Length: 496
Ligand code: UD1
Ligand code: CA
Image: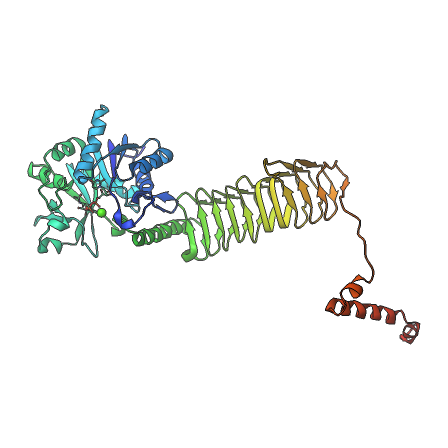
């Protein structure tokens, strides 16, 4: 459990986000580094181990609530029917908790669903400062290069926070203030409810401003404090897709920094993209133009890239993956993948095995040391240990209606251009001939052959394709053959 866990964290996420210009997605469901915007807010909040975690939803509430239920069922989604201001949103959340009989005794943290760079560490710093100073409310602030649009922090001559004035309601002198309100606060829960009861709507937007609670509490004699964020970028909110991309870059850089400091080599940070849940062991190497997504993990000394996209894929120690796409695959220690391989869900490559060039696999378990080196499709299959699958083989798993399984034993040598028509079983130590269509089981140690006889029609090209380059080459080859068979020429050879 986190020190000083708050009674509740309330994440505001009801706003429309018009500047995202999205028909399909509410703003807080746009993603960066493998998580939605609201998912980042929830993840940071969860690290504080609050008793209650509430997300206030409004715009496209069904989508947001469904997403929350799927990603974190412990989150309580509370509907704000109409977006009547940040103060109103918090009031709706408190009323929903009260209706459930929850008495908030302790700190209530308020944050936003569109501030993904805000870390749990900063939230912890905020609650710690709030409790240490005995404040009724502590606001997280920052000095920003361009404060336009934000609420400004008004301080007295002695530095004490007096109030927050919204940009739209501010005088020119107030607009010159660079210290802004992040919109993130730690409140005393009881005083928050009291203060919200006194908030009015006589402002330029006709809204219930949460910011007004600060002035209200201070005027009734309570302590109001502020914590200035170390890095103003932590509190940047996302309003459009340009800011979404900028923020993704910052978050990606943070993830890369952490990985490199933990002993991972990243050859080109500019073209390497990580999701928040990706993990590494030491001496993993990531080559350029590589995206590691979801819960992907790279084992010790493994090398991934260039040009790889791995999602929810486990790469074992010392494995090499080049120019490959993988989704929910497992690559064993020392295995080789690519260049140009596609590992689909359910692929499990054993130790030192290989899925080589232009190889696609799906739902395939490949034993230790087995190799599928070239130009093949392996679907719905089990391959034993130490087996080699010839080039250009296809595991024919689909009859047009159902999928079927192929089992290949250990230490087999299957020929090139084989079709394994599933369901079919090939025993241990089997050889198969090139070009075979294996549609019947092959017992251990047998040679499987299904090959029509070859027939050569002599002289066909010169008769049927006269005047072509092929015919001329055939004629020249025949002439050459005759001359080497010339007994005089043989006699003329030195030493003969
Ligand atoms: C708010 C603050 C401002 C601060 C800024 C930081 C107020 C009155 N102003 O301004 O001081 O500098 O955030 O970004 O609080 N929301 C709801 N329901 C509502 C209204 C808003 O859930 O009825 C949510 C929005 O989805 C958003 C957040 O609250 O996540 C902030 O709302 P927004 O309208 O962007 O507030 P600002 O005017 O930017
Ligand atoms: Ca905003």
